[in-house]
Length: 473
Image (cartoon, rainbow, N blue to C red; front, side, top):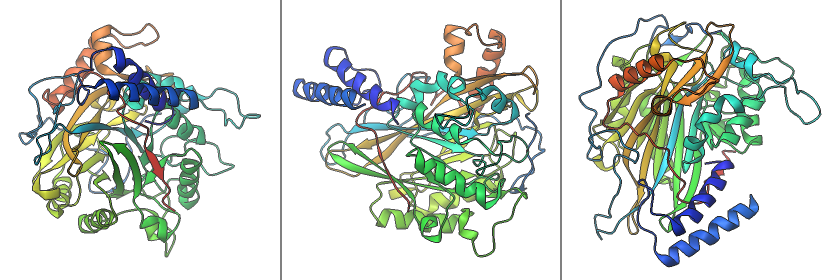
């Protein structure tokens, strides 16, 4: 929840005074609490060309898609039996007191990778007086605003670096995004992103550093790349006031793959996090010792265009879970959705919520260039419960499908990213060129991979003030 999310929170607090609680609300609102919420809301209002990629590492980039079904291990005490407009675990209680715990939602999205026609569509011709660099991605992402700004904490996977100063943005195969993409992600409601990917060094160390500079300018958090050894050793910290306490969320990010466009400068291996599971676990442990309540790890891994984890992915993930320090793993790189599982281990042995891959968010891929699943993504919504007299804990991970409309070929325009359930339920807007049959086929395909049990169909609502993004350096 960033910028527009504060407005959404204010509106939701005003609405809760007079309206019944939404199905995803954490608990009934008392009259005094409602009045306090109304006041808080008023105060906030007043202040307020696609082609297969290359790469080295765990998986080759030209693999054919597999046809595995959802994992049999996709189960959790917090799971529910069908598609839901609310989190899979709609309430939680403190083990000691039995009292209801407040909850908040983390939204995480897949790869942001602006190919050539994404860039061409975003060009608005305004590149001068107001500091605009001539690109506007807002119209392409506007359909996702309710989902992103409605979350209490929203994170993306920034797969491409920002182009260095003086260099024109460029798409596939060596990406360099315009700085305005980061600003538009912030305006949509994102609070931060992971930045450790196989493309992190596409524009050399200058692009890596420029990316973090732009994120800092926009007030967004970042994890996975660094400008100094000190920054490399620091997780991205977000703090939220929830349940009468300050909740500290630490975000780590690592990649198991790196393309060969540029090598890391000698003596600066810390600029890109390529941690082993043991190293990432040690970093998570250090974050907890420094006060983190919840630790998230974004991991860029696996094989492209497949719908199940590789043996290397599973080995790495299981090692992280066995380490007992990481609550949630957010996987990426395959450009296709891969299932959610609860891996044995995790903090206190309660399991580690893992999405093997969230697939795509904003890219120029679909069945015309690649495989059908690349047209979709599985954004995940993680529920974090905050007992009045206990430690915050992750209680559920759900998913919601997204899809893009582009083309009909690599030279055609890009018509944005959309909540797939809405296109199926409400019909395809006139400005899109997707047929009803195609959106239905895409939805059936992603449900086959992700399973219906954790499928969430309604966006979240903010439960408190927006998070504080703590500087890493």
